[in-house]
Image (cartoon, rainbow, N blue to C red; front, side, top):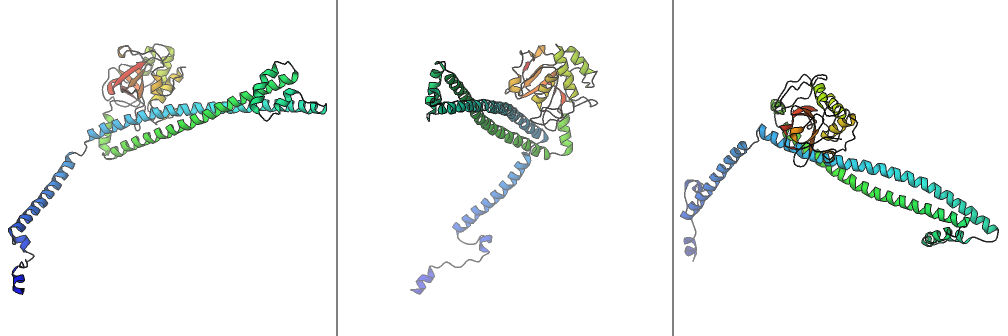
Length: 375
């Protein structure tokens, strides 16, 4: 029995057998497969490393992605600007309603005091006028419903009660409007916060990409913007005609070509803003975003533009690209998310994006969408 069991035992294999090809045929097959798998994994790892090296973004690809992020941030910035404008309007309206409610409440309290004095006098004389009793009723709705009827009786008491009822109703209306404004303000501030987070996220992602480039690569990227940010800088990019930004030079010429004195003042203001930094949400005087700059320029011309690109595009009649004149607003991208001020010779002054100050640039630098001449 023992011999039989022993005869079925497999001889113990030396550990080196797995490396030298020893053992059964099936074992060798398994080892071969394992070896091939390991070799394949090593090859794949090598290819992966090569693929990563091949797909590492070039400076041009980084620029394209950064430009896209800036454009997405511009969209969020305009949404932020619109929400902020709505929030500011709601705050002003709420303040006005609160002041109005306080004023009407003071008048209401004065009327109540008058009626209280009247009721006390009548009580001392042995009776209380029905109108005053109505005032003292525990049912306010019955009081308000009956006030109009009492007013028609012509009595002094009835007139006083009806006047009190009107004041009470007006106070309630103002307070109701104030409550609705508070709700609208809360909703707008929530949107404001959301758009702010989006802008910060997009700009942060763009900044992170730019940090992957060398200082020289970033400089070359800036020089390819085809724009100038102020007097004395060399011309870069396309465009016809001189780009002399010195007041009295091209700036004066552009203002002279403007179709109206207001447009001329807007152009002059834009030239004076050259070199100022871009800050999203800014309306000056030390920094601007794109619609903040055009709003400030036309304000200098005596025209109040709305805050965002989405609303500025409706601030005047549309102008064909071939008919552009200095002072016209030029809009870009299908979503109308960027705006500049046309200054002639195919050029505009605009606030591009963070890191790029207010500058002169060709209008064909971005996808042209439309143009408007503020009135």
